[in-house]
Length: 387
Ligand code: PMP
Ligand code: GLN
Picture: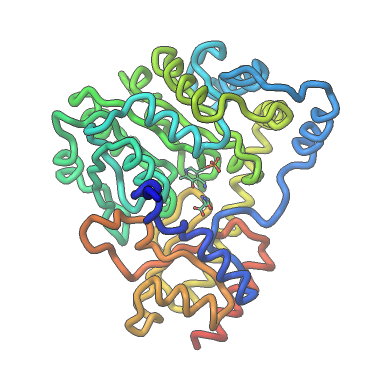
């Protein structure tokens, strides 16, 4: 028989699935894959449940239900002062993952270069490879996740078509500052590039303001801004995403969505519209709650002798393993922890280009979007295994 697709056949199963399987095998607390262990808001779930009985279960419109596109436009205005036309500048997708693929497909062709920042979310590189694009990776520098200006400048060139910017960032927990965004905006403009702004953690920041690149001068027409109901409403299984982009780009993103999925579940869309319209207090308590959990985990890790890297947003904090790993790599240490401590994490080397230079091997990622009592129990288990 002829072979199946060479690239996909050899693509390893995602580290999130591998670590979740190990967590199940060893009955470990899963601080690996990033998902909350509590349900999203009951009122949003009720709207979805009621909507199923409402005779609107056939295909939704291609770019999304009008009420959800309206809610996306309104939340752009409420949080960032962006004036968005819900009819032409919003595309609803089946999760931010599909949104990423659709945005990349909308602007990138085989041979184009795309600037990425490592450590990076694990779907970016495979998506680029499948399009035939060429990744140009720039590494943030631990321990402060500094963006190296000269290296970033060098990654841009005449073939640069786009950049993927993830802020707040997975796995680094970094929220890009105004100054960093200005540097990026300057390079993007100079090289006439587009930016796919992965902002799924936009509402999960801790006393640091999330600034969409799209709000900077001249960036409105170059950015495709991606949000995720999974993250904003603690409903990661729903897979509802939304792209905000100027109409010239949104119309092409919609073509990609037409080819990939066509339409997203209508009851979930109605519920997400309801969620997006929740008042400011919802969003404040979402981040305050998560910040509390971050602090429990980070303080506990420090007590155990781990150094942690700054985490101003997202579900994640990265810890330096040097003190405890006894020569093990991050992968070996994460495997050891899941088996011997009963705590699953993610080795951070998984977030680097496997074809790039040797990645750091001394960092693991903890997800803190878990109940406080679970985080305390995980810390007790770590203490028992490591001291
Ligand atoms: N981008 C980043 C940085 C993420 O962490 C995630 C969450 N898995 C996604 C995109 C995908 O989001 P969704 O579940 O809505 O597809
Ligand atoms: N975004 C989640 C994480 O980083 C996982 C999503 C997935 O498993 N595909 O943990």
